[in-house]
Image (cartoon, rainbow, N blue to C red; front, side, top):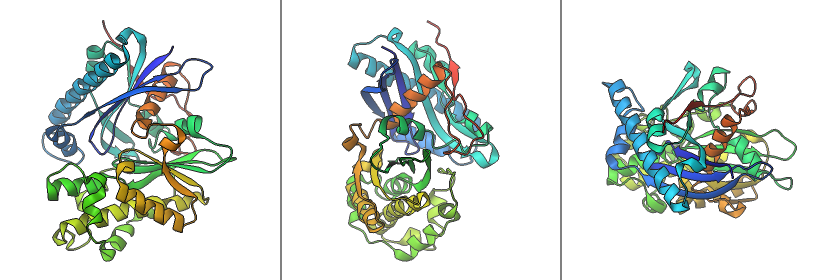
Length: 368
């Protein structure tokens, strides 16, 4: 067996997903098991405060990086215990870290996480910093998972669009006869989560119950959809640098709208930006959703209605393809860790715009 562990903490900043996968030679990659640990409200605030400029950033980022490593080590230990494995059984841990800044236009991206500490705490080699090499070659550094989607979810019979709805939403286009492509679509859960916490003191609008009880403000929606990002052709990527509270304040009076109307409008923006963003692909097909957003039934309903109106065949979750939608991204980073340890380049040229395939990641060896 060739066991790898993948760690994913996305732009929603809701928790760490920890996945065990097997990449034995001459076999299809196999998802084996997963666990998830939630970030506490204090941890969410700690990471969230670093996504925009502020005082004492270096000190706060250092403390947050250590907190990431400690929580990640807890998740790894739980996963090992769940599967009756020792650290020695794992080839490597692949850790995404926590994104706090993503500015490919300025030549950098930052995912914090004290990975030397994580290697020491877990007793396992850690591979991290997967995005920088792509940006160094002129790429966007995101999204990183489409090449993995092609390997495990590609089909010769239908066009498949794999939509991940985390803090930011992104798509992988798996179209027979065409090279795999993918890009960030726009806000996933980030604006709705922001409003849920600000207006209702809860981490998210579970199942979209609050949004479904509100009314979409069409004027605000039109204002938001006029943002230039939605018109930029791929490759492209984005993050909380754009989709944050300041973005919502672009519509005068948004903050005095009824709270449920604010959530309804943010949710509709997510649905519209996802479905309309698929138009760049100039193809129709089946939409399969993963990530936390797939559990929001109101959002899924709106995506389904809008997608069918634009000629897509169906909207479902990747569970219909035999993959747990909560752990697909963790599985993908385990795969990226495997590729790094084998020194196999990943071809992101048609996805991020990088100049040629590149080996992604940096190694932090353990010291037992």
